[in-house]
Image 1 (cartoon, rainbow, N blue to C red):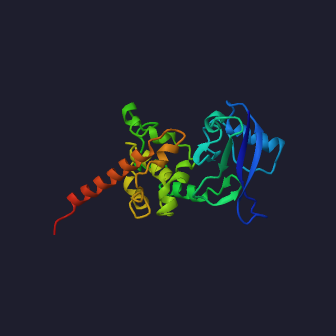
Image 2: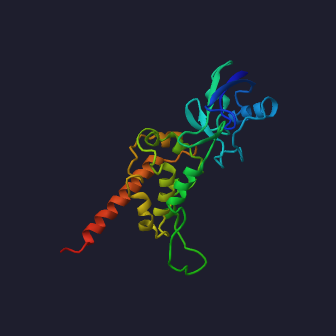
Image 3: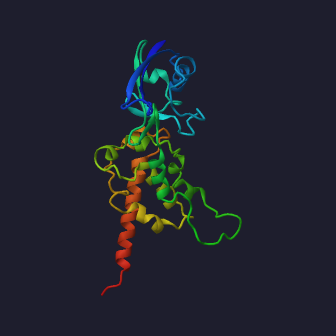
Length: 246
């Protein structure tokens, strides 16, 4: 089967704007898009830039926009994006992040937002034994959020960041916050509030569900964002009830 990959190219040393170049590739319908990219890089154009690592959908490094949708190249089969011989597949870098080269983006803004929500357990209490014991039932409450591989697909697909508020914290950072907020061993909810409960924090989300649709790990991203919003609202109400009356 012969297909064409229309790939966005950009070399900051010589290009003012990105351009598209089309490559013909012989593939099997069961090949992955990553296989096709590697054929081009190894056999035709070694200057092609893209990221990859584990090639098994775990590291998230080869996230890119394929036919207009955020996907992992290592999990995208040719037959799912090219329905017939001679089909053209458009491949572009992630959106909402500065372009570095070809299919590579600068992920610093994404990870800056990730670090902002303190994605680690906060608990000043001393550990009684070797670890803080947790029941399977309590673990299930935040299990979905632990599947995140920080691929930035949701960050790229978010229409709020594209169209409304570029400073929005972004779905992935909120998911990381929710993972610890919903962990009964964690005591850092109020410590994370300044990074969540402000105009560019969690509230710009408009429930458009694009983050959920593109997540390669099938995380219910929008649901977790809304649950975190609810937790913040409930905390506000509780504080209002306990506020001293003057």
